[in-house]
Length: 146
Image (cartoon, rainbow, N blue to C red):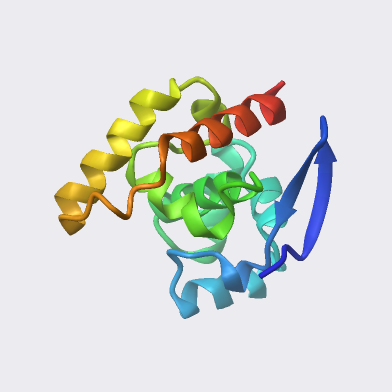
């Protein structure tokens, strides 16, 4: 699937996905966001820039703040091209909640975290992305952050 919209930042094209494509949201949650005029991941990131704006959005949607925090984190991570919709949930479950945080993690340490997660939850080492892929994620996050 290709991103709906894209923005260029320091030679990286950031992805902007339809809210319908964002993993980790129920159909009801996607509908709630769309009814609030949030149709893309970029729109969700813009609506959730600060803790105060996230709280306002949670109140408007009548959901717990933790859900809005999760959705914004997924949208933030998904904008990195090498992560996209395929790996944003994996990174969030591995403890990475933002592009800024990702930019500061040593790739080998993050790879170990992901490997531990894959083994603990699925007993599968083979599903872990290679360390080279993790290095690309971190490099692209550093480019976006700068």
